[in-house]
Amino acid sequence: MAITESSNKIRIKCRQCGRVAAADEFVIDYVYKKAVCPLCVKERLEKQYKQPVAPEAPTEKRKTRCSKCNFEFVYNLSKGTPVRCPYCNFTIKIN
Image (cartoon, rainbow, N blue to C red; front, side, top):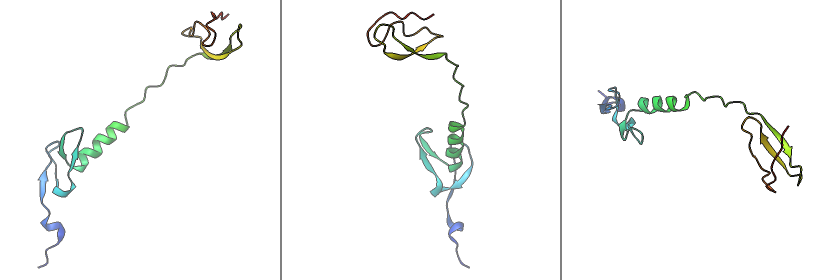
C-alpha cells in the first residue's frame, strides 16, 4: 500500500470560523491576529473590496478669472469658496 502525500497531511480546525483545513494552508492574518484558514482570508478580502462606494455629491464648480489680476481659478458656486482670489487676495464678486 502506497502512502500518498494527501493522506498524511495534518488537518486542524480554524479558530475563526471552525472549518477544518490542512495545516500547511493556514496563514497568519494581520486583521484577525491569528492563524486562519484560507477561506477566512478570502472572505475578508471579498468583503473589504466589495464595500459600496457612496457617490459624491454633485458640486457646481466653474472656472473664474480675477477681475484685478486676471488669475484663473476654480470657484465653487454651492459653497461660495474661495471668497478671495488665491493669487492677489482681491474680494471675488460673482453675479
